Amino acid sequence: MRSTLSIGDVADQTGVGEGTLRMWEQRYGFPAPERTGSGARRYSARDVELIRQVAEDRARGLAMRAAIARARRPSGSDVSVFASMRRSVPGLVPQRLPKWSLTAISRAIEDESLAAAERPVVLAAFQRERFYRQVERRWEELSRTARLAVVLADFQAADMPLLRPIEVPIAPDAPLVREWALVIDAPGCAACLAAWEVPDQPAAPRDRERVFEAVWSVEPETVREAARVLLGTAVANGPELLGNAERLLDDVPPAQGDAVRQLNALTNRMVAYVARAGAAPA
Image (cartoon, rainbow, N blue to C red):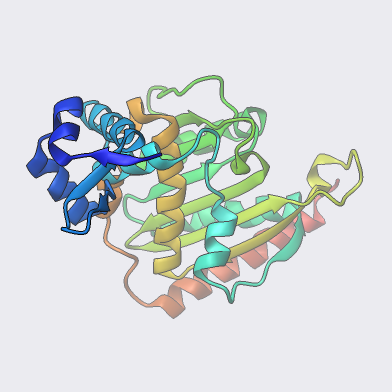
């Protein structure tokens, strides 16, 4: 697509002033016009479309970075939390685990956040709405003290039930449809778990025996990155409910305090919960 439009042309077609376009480019790297030999900016018709979309989303209350991410993201291309964690921390070694053990690990992380965290941001991907409904009451309790609680699944529509987590739908072809993700981000507790359901298993395994490849971390930087990925996907799919949510995440201080103590507490809880789940009848 040829880039022949001047910055004045773009300002006229989008209603976004030249000064604002320059500021966006300098601060956010958006838009990204081509340059002539003399250094003049040149934009394409596609640039105009993206700028219009960002301007519209900003007018609806969406945070700037979220609006840019939404405009640049092709339809149905929601990102993978699992893949993002592997890219950001190459040393994470995936472990193949049955669903029952992932459930136990998730419960341990959730309970440790209730015991140790102050006003956490709590985010999760459940694959299917029916899986979330099985633990909905538990998540209502988690959301009572959370700064923000968001769940993603194949919901029919975005919803914000009274005193409950915000429910955000994901597209049928999105990577998150195959993923299990949980993020707890707060000054007193930080942990994230991400897993994807592997295809090479029996055609109809018992639900609790379904196998996932999983990684998890308590490193504050890794947890914050996982939170941004999951929240960014939620904002893109439910902007009417989460327009400024990413700004809220920026206001949450990273996990602090004795990291070894926090890790020991969470690890002990995880081991106990997994042992208990493994001993439960099938």
